[in-house]
Picture 1: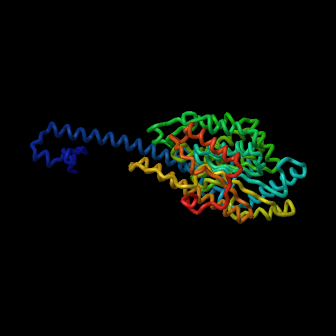
Picture 2 (picture 1 turned 135 degrees about the vertical axis):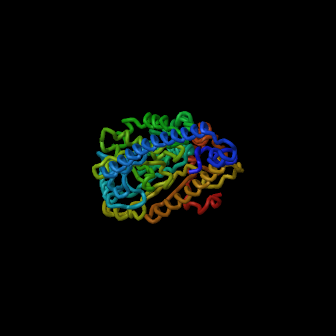
Picture 3 (picture 1 turned 60 degrees about the vertical axis):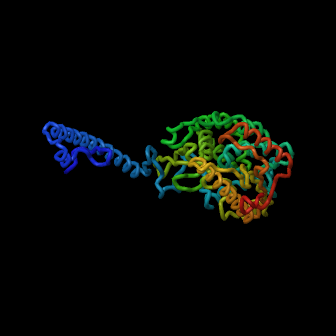
Length: 452
């Protein structure tokens, strides 16, 4: 072996080779002994390191095999659900509280039959808003700080006197944070206003800086979790549970990032379960639905898969769809005829927390500005595509769809993700639109430019 030392000189070659010792007159026993001694020392260090590495590797292998044999797959310090057991994973203590959002299953069918039985009883008892002849639905999209638009719109809608009593409310991402209070009705308009106008970036997240880039996210969302807990009190959870018994449903969406699939969570069923940890589970699901990948940390959901405890990893529901109404291939009329004796008149209202039109903005030719602008453009087109898909599913079920979005005339730009001044102004814009009663449109445009 020619090389005695692995360091490189400026030319990129190893300076301590036998050939160069001879050629440059370095051949003396003392230096040679020092070099050989250094080499022996390096060998010892390498041997110790190799032994340590081997012990760690063996330990990691044992942990992996143990987790795999136990029914879970070790991923970092997390025991993930094996792909073959995804459908078997359950949140311990709960039944029928969640479903895949991309398929219609027998469990969903049973859930709809149960719901319509509750609606029928509530309507017979004269419960306000319960009807076997008509049903109104509300879907609130994702959009980060633009969620202030939906909050303002709902409060203005209340003041107009035209706001319906929704049988089902769905929310994704920032829409999920608004959904519980939209579901409970006008008496919670003050909470909507506070949540979406009172708090800014520093109240919601902690910037981890460069350390965040080495971990799971740029920001720590502990403040956001505390804020959700502050407003989602036990009284709120109890109120949601009471509405569940009347056949009303509160639905939010997360993305199971391991499975790359949307997950639909029935928060009203969780609330009605009376499980001691129901409030904590709802908080975690809401936090997960708004967990913007890379920016916010993913949320672990503890599940049981065939008798073994594993952790699923959930992120922003907007990763798979920014708006959710119903899974594909669902036929509401069939269930309505069985429960009510005939199909109902159904209307779906969609609040899109974003503009449908393109926004012109000269982009700096640098990595971060280009990435930010590209993601914003991707999100705009995905949001419009999701709106068209929701409209298609609604039309297939003979449901009328009406939607509203941030008007193109609103030109103020946010200085950050949760710019309090920006959100306050956007709230007022939404409030005026909700109050006007003229903000609804049908037939989403085929492209952003078509919405101009």
